[in-house]
Amino acid sequence: MAKKYGVRYSRYADDITFSTNQKAFPAALAVQDAQNPAIWTLGGELVSKIEGCGFQINDEKTRMHSRGSRQMVTGLVVNDKVNIASEYYRRARAMCDSLFQTGEYYKGMLPPEKEGDEPKPDLTSNLNPLEGILSFIYAITQTEERRSIQDQRLKPRAIRHLYRRFLFYKHCVALQTPLIITEGKTDPVYLREAIKRRTQFQPQLGQSGEDKFEYAVRFFGYGRQAAEIMDLNGGTGELRSVLMDYLHNIDATRSRRKPMKHKPMSRPVILLLDNDSGLKDFAAFVKKNLGVAFDVKSTDPFYHVRDNIYVIKTPEGAGESCIEDMFPKKWLKKKLKGKSFNSAGKIDPSTEYSKEVFAKSVVVPNADEIDFSGFDPLLDRIAKVMDHYIP
Image 1 (cartoon, rainbow, N blue to C red):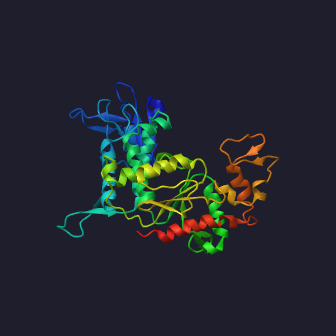
Image 2: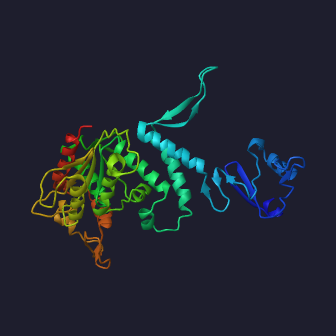
Image 3: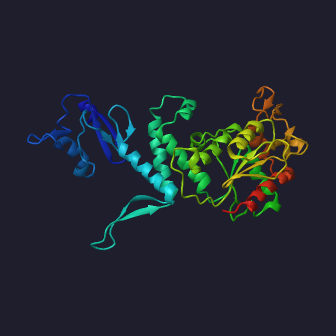
């Protein structure tokens, strides 16, 4: 019918929309009431088609939107571009504010338990529904975003600010399991295999379950939307953004935002860094803004920065170190198709392979043969943080 009458047809589940630029809407689809122009009824041909397929029409949800009005399709404003209704965003913002201040937010109203009672707010502390709402708003607004990610970071839209604040609350404030945020994207691969095979750190860091190994710590996932929103894409420098979130969201003197009052922080957050030249600027930032000092020569097992946030470095040994130094040299020298491993950020792909390839093609398939005892000093530092932290 859409093709027959020159209109566009779209559908989401059982919601059907017809749209057109024609001056007169096809009468076979909808007819305007002669007495009340605000009332439209579906055309006979369209009703026949719908009912002939076994469906019933919900007259309460049938409406006409003209160009001069706010045109809504499945909850989205579609006048000139697809956007979120302003009241939908305001509701999401109010839900977040309630969560940050009380640990709960309202999803709606519960029906009265008995006649004469007032309806009660349906409160929840489940973060999943609210995260879905924020992710949906962000995805819709991103369809019209033409700026680079870098520009969005420098001048974020309101939804990016709000979504980032929620993700900080989820990962760093309301966490149920100790969180490790590593400098490198491949570091979690190494650490998971080491924890699985170094039994002296079990069950504190993890233990074998009925079907799989169950880790007692969680690693922040790079490559996901949360990493992009929180300005975390690997590298020591970007870990400063985690500390900035603590200053902006917890410390009322550092931001114009309303500080979070609900701060369970039942588990620690650990920033794990290589003890190399890249540490210098990060350490300077921590000392200036948080008053905690460390450098490549300091040897403390951990540094309690503030609240539940800690910093640990790869063990110092003879000086600078990185996490790959903990592997036996035979595995670091392993050739793949004639190429050698290079742990640097830039490699020559004609003769070298990267950390990602090392993790995927050397560490994981050979984990049962690799001696992970070199990771013991680092795993011990993680365990010491878990012992030290008291909520």
